[in-house]
Image: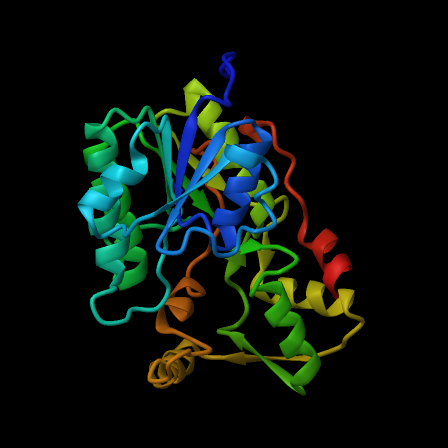
Length: 306
């Protein structure tokens, strides 16, 4: 049952609140009348459009690797959202250090300081036994968070899209530019893309409901596509007729390995690894439906951006 007490006196500290998903989490929490504390190394970045509610949006500078700054940032908070993620490893910033060590540190400190609700962002397909360092770190991170904060709510989104994303927009750009579009493998990998605003709303609703304590919530959109079907859907929205060309995953891995030498690689090995597995919500987990959310479709967003 949803909480009946006012939310405005309850502070939710959002780590990673300036990112693609984090900005939506902040906005949706505010729409549910929580007071939000944006926690990041640069807390004001990317949120100027949100700061229209006076003191209802706060800011705190903290490093998720630094215990003392975390303690200060979560002081007095009712809930914590960990939306920090890493997609490219650089030096000491590794998948394990961010998705496992830092996540466990935040969960432990949240528990020790009396935080009532913790939402940890992971991803569909997280697997501690995976050979992929990225996917494995997501699974190990979930386990470490649960060990430190047993009532944590795990949110596993499918690949996320939105009007300003790097997913659908990149697909459309490449479809327009390339004479033949190289597909990951045969194009048979199944995807269930979720709108980033819907995932943000799911997080806000999870925090205000008691029955989501300790739950796993998998956020998948209204339709499951094969990768090839998704490309065809995007092409149709843009009135394009591309030639789709299967490319073996071994080739993609070689290309990604070379690309990662660049400071801002257009392709990484973890992206290739993610495209080798299906990203579809499980029927055994809670999802948008149980939260009363009717998720937006890829087609709707394509109409707006194509």
